[in-house]
Image (cartoon, rainbow, N blue to C red; front, top):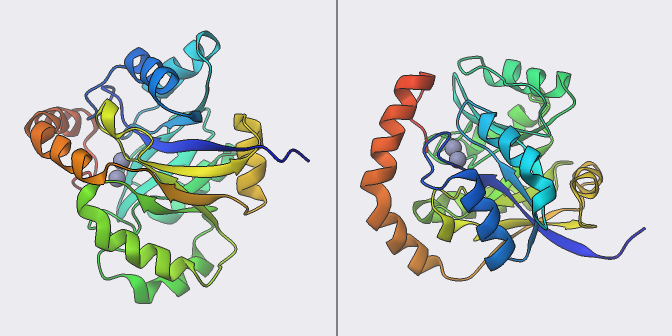
Length: 242
Ligand SMILES: [Zn+2]
Ligand SMILES: [Zn+2]
């Protein structure tokens, strides 16, 4: 068993949904400016950008997980290691089942934020949901600046150890945000990442530069919002995206 540990940012948006960067820009940035070995492209309600990234993977010194951030009837669910697009608008349980059917990993992102499956005050329902919902990973760290409180709740709830892999992601919508939240896993490839998630040995960490990133978001937010309006018109998700 390898004792190399690597970093993966499992929550990145491109301009295929409401991110600002193109897929080649993201991949070049990750290669030149980060120490990430693996990235997951997780656009809202589409895997087109992720599939494009996967097809370009051999040109870069990194590996790509095909993902999708799916708008369910009650919050966002991320599917990782997907092969086919999963439609928006199903229940959380149906969405998780659809992810599992194609052999993917269901990850609950920003679980206690407004768009999280458990809502901003949903900690009480969390225990019951753990039994009902067969998701495999919980994003205990999300680097969106206004989710500081939600992150704290997620980390606290998770501290009990629930048989679910802990993951971190940046939820980056701009290049500078990529890698600010990440998952540490054993090995360095997407296959290693998958094994590490299955073995529940991953952990979430945060990068430096939170304040600078918060300012960057404040600056670009009007553009992200415009793009989000467009995305919403195209994808018609059930709820406002985070
Ligand atoms: Zn997101
Ligand atoms: Zn989201």
